[in-house]
Amino acid sequence: MGWLPGYAALVTGGGAGIGRAVTERFVAEGASVTVFGRDKSQLDEVVAVAPDRIHAVTGDVRDSGRLYTAVAETVERFGKLDTLVANAGVWDYQRQLTRLGAAELDAAFDEIFAVNVKGCLLAAEAAWRELVKSRGSIVMTLSNASFHVNGGGPLYTASKHACLGLMRELAYELAPKVRVNGVACGGMNTDLRGPEALALGDRSISASFAKKRPDAPALVPLHDSSTDPRDFTGPYVLLAAREQSGPITGHAISVDGGIGVRGFAHAAGGDHL
Ligand SMILES: NC(=O)c1ccc[n+]([C@@H]2O[C@H](COP(=O)([O-])OP(=O)(O)OC[C@H]3O[C@@H](n4cnc5c(N)ncnc54)[C@H](O)[C@@H]3O)[C@@H](O)[C@H]2O)c1
Image (cartoon, rainbow, N blue to C red; front, side, top):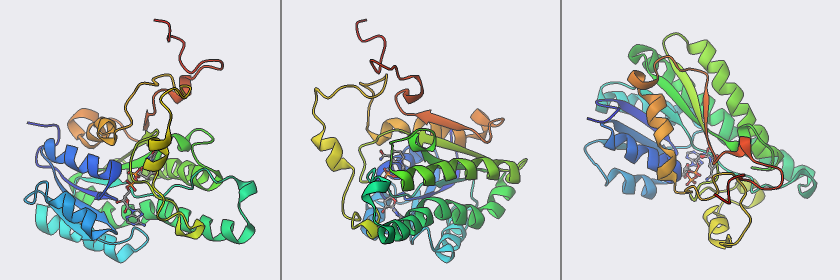
């Protein structure tokens, strides 16, 4: 028996990266999952992993109607909705303010906030009625950029700080029946893309990981910790499982190799051990 026996979940951005890893982990823990995303071929690949327990709905998180369809099809196929993982997002490739023209800034703000922030809010709006019925929960994918600078540029950092505030506000508004928490991920080797508005829609963060030199200085205390998204899925399971985290709401678990305890001269104080 896993930690999510008989659970039904909906994962936005479930076709790749951490969303796909969470989906496969939830299935291994006993759940059924609807994956929602805009790339049908990615979703089909995920469904093939466990066709009896994974269902796909194509759509964009900026489209409330498709999110309503995803919730309705989850209930139709799996009987209920216990967990919404609000996860789909785009990155700004750390583009600094001084490298953005006014028109680019205007368009990229609208796109990044619409996907990263409004996308979570619309998904929560589509899902809350079913989550009240199941006494379920929402788990949002946050970021080290929800707490710290330079994980993105101003657009991404502001959007992920906004997601932290959204998580906390919804935790208040949906209590006591629905818990709302977040997982603040650090760098993961995924297919994370940039905004079309900056012509970064085809760029993948995986290229930055491929370029990283093995002798590059450590950035975080746990500098030898994994960047494989599968190794970030544990907190999602914990926060989804009412039996494991029933009293937890309004909380973000950081899974970032210890950014908050990074040293000034050296990232880790125990390199000599
Ligand atoms: N990769 C990292 O280093 C990292 C670090 C911290 C937080 N995150 C966050 O993790 C989340 C998932 O990103 P990932 O790294 O797994 O990237 P990914 O690109 O591998 O996966 C994201 C998925 O979401 C889908 N998607 C993107 N925009 C969408 C939209 N508008 N509507 C529907 N689906 C959409 C993509 O097609 C893809 O399937 C994002 O919120 C990101 O900000 C990533």
